[in-house]
Image 1 (tube, one colour):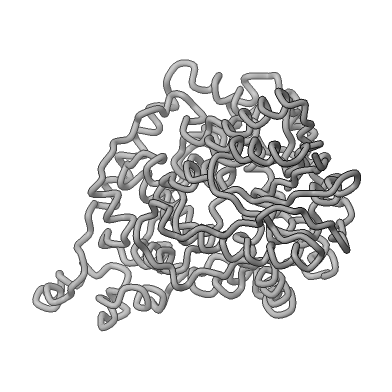
Image 2 (cartoon, rainbow, N blue to C red):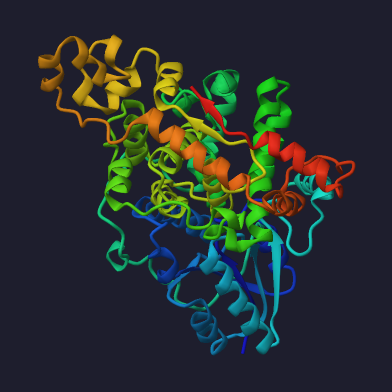
Length: 498
């Protein structure tokens, strides 16, 4: 039997700067494969918009591999079953892939693959996709490790790989998935070529406006990098973006690199504690919120009666992307004002994001819901946010045609029109507010603060900080419980963004 190395593509859909690829070809011919796992794709965090982006990226990757000798092989099914099938035709010398920090199912799948590889005497070599590290980790030294890995040289794609005598397989029909019916006409197109085009456009045309427009729900669509889907699916490596940013002396390049650092910082949390996808950081916040499918649907469909919230949600539904500040506001509104479990609202948002990255997503969901105990918490006021970031109401009118004829005086609070002209207000075909902002805010703040006053709360918070807290250098007196607790207790006061 012919000896080969399996190159298992997961979310590293490129041949440039792919360490697993470069290492796999050193001593054997490779079998490059992508496996579509239905149990993972059929989770409620996944969606057709994500699959379409992935499919386009797979086509791009297959073509790139074909140009150097061997097209991408595609299979659908259980990973171990497919590896067993390959082992009946070839002698597998090694299994090569990137080190994935995915969701709970991919975590458990990797454990099974590791057991399978051991049972077959096959060495599985995993390589860093990001600067996220496995095993026991000292957070005090994380920044140094991150910087060292991020400064490594880019790896060129191989010039040639030998072909393998195996049916390459077809990309399956979309009908095999159980996605909800939806359209996402505004989403970005997948594949490395599209990612490189976007990166070139941003650095050539939009870097100067990056910091100025980053919080605007409308301008950020053009002025932000919009590279997150390409990073998420591995069409472009983080190192490539860093190298490109280093060429520029623009202050905005430093801001961009700082945000890319945060990217890895958050994924590292899930790598260190995979249960954070569904379990609260701090146990005192377990089951404090109430399921409400009616409120969840109103929020998810953009029908809460609060124009800026609904405009942002409808824009997200259409485009599969929205900027960070608006993501935080949407999650804050669901968690505090609607008092919905972060797991429910988080799953709804996850399947809307083409750039759904579990390590970032679930940690942000918990941050914006106030369950971490180590982050400053803010309850975003959607009315103030609208006035700050859409002062003329153009974004609102674009996404809420029901309000296209309302005057600027009432665009952010259409219900106020009833005070001056009840008849005109009743003519507006827009849903009335589903909750009261001031009352729901006060209620949420009171509930959260009551939890922080329970005995033992700050002792647990200290342990969470030691494991997951952000710090560039070792903190002095880190083992002094009083110092840490006082600092975090002050930070934890809920800030109302009114």
